[in-house]
Image (cartoon, rainbow, N blue to C red; front, side):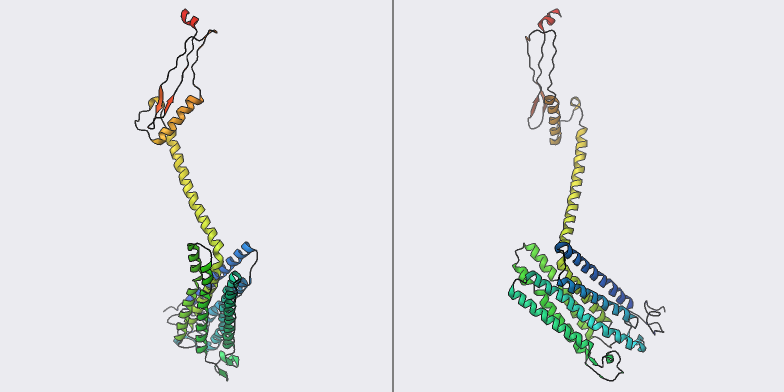
Length: 386
């Protein structure tokens, strides 16, 4: 049986082909999601610089969060080299220490990444609605609480064992805190702060003097944070199902999804001008297509009208309105514009007869008559000689 991808030759100390491996999925997730996050942060910076000419502290916090997120994804990829994605039965025992050392590095990176995108959102709330003292006080309280809790968990994950090396090498004498309750406390606290951060802008949005559709759109944008909360809940359940310390594939995958999605969601409120510009381009494109169709239709109509037969050869009985209009315009141009007059005169004698003839030239369904006036002059002496 052939070995699954990213196993033999990829995993250190693996000598027999495992039954299965999830390393390929972990690597794909750890590459694609950070690329999406970097793209969103880049767009956010571009929009802020083009609209206001500078970046704010919320942008800087998000950029730092994105950088830490890339570091966390790199640790996940590196862990696959030491057995992440393998079942416990296939995991090489000699990989436990280096695997645990990398996992130890990933814990603080995760905590600080979460802190970064939460700080970015809270600072943006202060920038937009900090003029309201009560609202600003609430936001500052949440901000300080989030910073304290995330730094506390970062310290616990970093120095949970004495000596610290016992964190990744259980054979070293010393003491360690039980890591599982710390993970649950971290996940539950983070989930609670997320819910508070999501609902914080709603009172301000409700009071904004905007039309209903815009309010709904803004509520939808800020409600995207619920996706991060859902992912956090799934991550907590994956931690609860951990069989061994090396069987951490589920928690690492969902942690990567959570922090990348958090970075993306923190960028979305800035994309308003970009979305508006895109909508205008789509609208202009639609109008251009309609205009082209209208011009094409007019050209076809003009071509049809240009093929109208001569006046004496017209044989249809019920002309259309368009045909009436073009016929009337042509007759008027020919008669009035040309000032049709027939004159024949000889040597300078006075006029003794002037006749006028009137005949209907063209009658359409709306009873518009076009008449031609003809004046005939003749010399009496010339007539007598004839």
